[in-house]
Length: 192
Image (cartoon, rainbow, N blue to C red; front, side, top):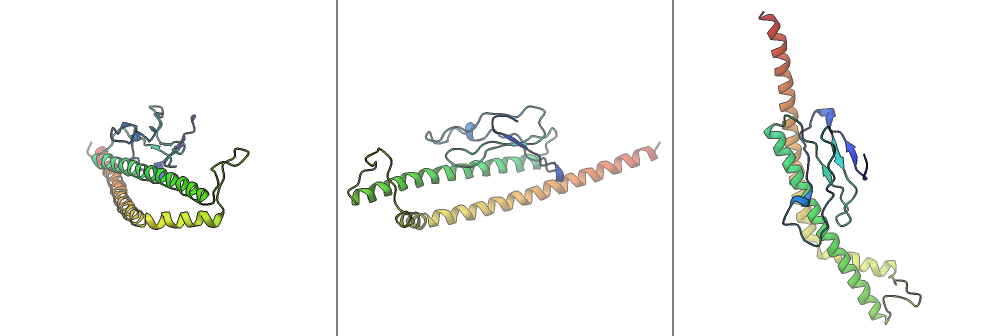
């Protein structure tokens, strides 16, 4: 399990409805400022999800989903929704973190200029602001992005609720398939 990726198995409940994910590097619409995600793929015989190192911009760990051999349409739908949600989450936090960094740097520079200070001190080290000054920025940033965060949270809950319902349906379908398959095995020898 090299390159900082770890294996995660979802086998306890037989919810192997998740599949190999090609991360966001497949998406042509991704912003050019965002680096492509890892192109690493687990070996073909892998039976679990693989989780990569955090993305430098979104700070989220990409997941390469396992694709079961006999994936049903419902399992495929679940896999696609999980993939889409992960990509949506990655895009949101990449944009949010870039915006945060730019605004924070701009705030620090403006506060230093107001004090007639340069960005670097006499030894060439970058100057910083104290905790109280930075708290002013953090509050301002949160207030300014309140509506955006509320919309994000609402959509995140909606997506996760839908994923949870699909996972339950997949689990029920798999149990039903197991029960039906068990009945066929027990009834076949009796007919001979």
